[in-house]
Amino acid sequence: MKKNSPETTIPATGSRRDFLGKSALAGLVTAGATIGLSGCKEEAAPGKAAAPAKAADTGEHIKPGQLDAYYAFISAGHGGEVRVLGLPSGRTLKRIPVFNTDCMVGWGITNESKAILGTKPDGSLLYTTGDTHHVHGSYKDGTYDSRWLFVNDKINARLARIRMDTMECDKITSLPNVMGFHGIFPDKRDPVDAAINYTTRVFCGTEFHMPLPNDGRDLDDPTKWGCLFTCVDAASMEVRWQCRVDGNMELVASSYDGKLAAATQYNTEGGADLAGMMSAERDACVFFNVARIEQAIKDGKAGTIGASKVPVVDGRKAANADPATALTCYVPVGKNPHGVNASPDGKYFVCAGKLSPTATVIELSKVLGWFGGEVKQPRDCVVAEPELGLGPLHTAFDGKGNAFTSLFLDSQVVKWNVDASIAQFKGDKAAKVVLDRIDVHYQPGHGYSSMGETREADGKYFNSGNKFSKDRFLPVGPLHCETEQLIDISGAKMSLMADHTAYPEPHDGIIVRRDVVKTRQIHSMTDFPNAVTPETAGIERKGNKVQVRMMSQAPSFSMPVIKVKVGDEVTLTLTNYDKVEDLTHGCAIPTHNINFIVNPQETKSVTFKTDRAGAYWIYCTHFCHALHLEMRSRLLVEA
Ligand code: K7E
Ligand code: RUQ
Ligand code: CUA
Ligand code: CA
Image 1 (tube, rainbow, N blue to C red):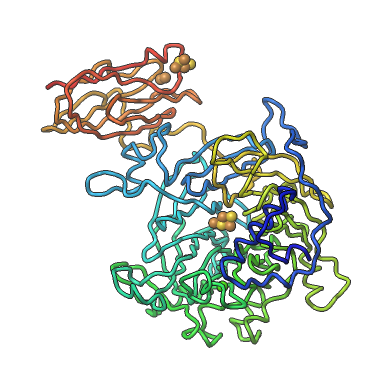
Image 2 (spheres, rainbow, N blue to C red; image 1 turned 90 degrees about the vertical axis):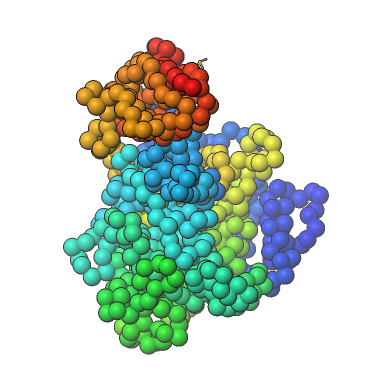
């Protein structure tokens, strides 16, 4: 088939689709690899031409004043935040600062946010960068419970938690001895205690191997480097344990029965360059037996690495050859897999091939069977390997037995039937596996469906997070926006509903029914131990440390004048005394790098040095009242 012949020249007359498909493929080929693409016999759907860049058929139009049926919580990639959209409209509802700084909210500026982000001894932020890829919600009974969202930082190996009620980040944890923390997934219930039918752990995969510990040893010998799978306690956000594996880990999935977690491995070779990471014909999906790992730790079988106190067990193959005691099981899958996703019926994990044109369907009961000694080889856990197209990355589900896999190289989403793929694998030549294909624009990464990662997958929408928009939108200079395309998957045929723009770079997301999400629109004063009340308001000096306790109530600050001296360390605590929903105030101090907001009944504080004498107008930045502009106070710094 034509897409299997890598062409390095781009025909001048080629369409945008051809250009993209071939150049991306050529890129992989010139990387010096023999990539196993030749197995793809399924011809792509006959030339559906690229849709012209005209107004989209918006399908279900959400009228002004009407509310969306779903929330989408989407990672922002190397922007470091999490975004909240309404679907199907694609309206941006919120941007939740997490690993980035945000000057509207004051994230990275206020003392409270700095305490979450972490600081150096001089009080400055530990990091100002982050790279979020995977956002997942906490579960109860196999569906979202609206308590928390979890999201990774690939750059600095941190896991963040977001409270769902206020949609604000409340904890960030650093993973020790980990680099390239990529996939995450919360567990869905406890593997042992049946009463715990909700999320208590978050599993984290590590993509980059590194010296253990990374203290200067083994720099010239990457064969000694390793990767740790990490389990974080969802409630305390403390790291519970780690498990060392052979090879690396990318994306992560958890089973509905709580017994298994798994991670795809594209670098089973332990290679340190492209050729090295692509030399094996098959890679793996490594499964973790959660109960056994935790029992091994209880039995004192864990060690530690470097300065970290976290217990680490050995999940490498040599130490886990006996299924009766093994902590891990390495199931061979197609070359350099990317995503791994759990089917909503709880039966299967589907690994997407990336460099193999297939998906690998793994039956979880067989993995448990391998641990139990009933299934001979890890490879026997594979029950289907359908050929889907070029560059499969991620798979979503509709809850009706169908899967939807993004094809990066083909710029398509392919709909296929899981049971049919299993029948075909058993030899049924008549099985109709691939049911439909739809072009997306262009090169999709993640795709995710409405409630698709829960038992309540409803098969309504699929969002395709595309990596290139090319000419789909008005040009805005060299950096293009990305496209998120909303696809209706409720019928036999998929249909494109809308193009939504996305600021780079969206990866994974979840689509959550709006009734599941329970928010709280007003903070409670009692949530803030440092809340300022009329009784505690005022100014207090201890040496050169000055506490300024102020309240805001539209349209004024409780202190019209604040007098301090050069060289003081001022801590300004501001409580928004207004109780009215939506009545947010801001607080900015010119030339002092202070800017933050306080929502109704919320308290925040900032600490800064006064180094220049003068008068500075503290003003409200958030439009709050007809006299918002007049809402000011004077900071007078005496020489
Ligand atoms: Cu495919 Cu980080 Cu989920 Cu991005 S990874 S697309
Ligand atoms: S003023 S309402 Cu700055 Cu023109 Cu804003
Ligand atoms: Cu207070 Cu504007
Ligand atoms: Ca590989």
